[in-house]
Length: 104
Image 1 (tube, one colour):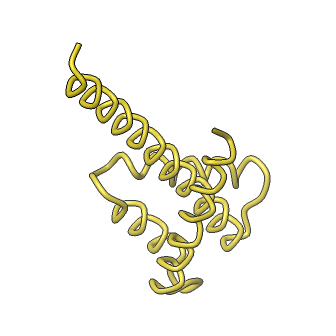
Image 2: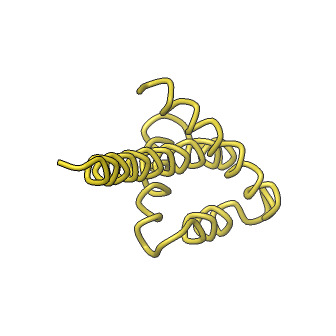
């Protein structure tokens, strides 16, 4: 086996690993965002958990995060503006990445 083949396999493995971590971080961010939004809506307990899961599943509507943003923005209408929601999404993405790295 050549060095080139070894490097190619290592690159492919790293790409797959990074994609897996990115998917986990996005899903974690969406759950954390759902928990934050549920709190803004006054939801607690099972209602809050169910709402957070609805935010996670909203991400499957289309590629990217705009589907999640639109859901939360519509649900929080009059309680949080777009800039606040986007800032929370960015902050929670950093938090989700940190949590995922700590777990691995």
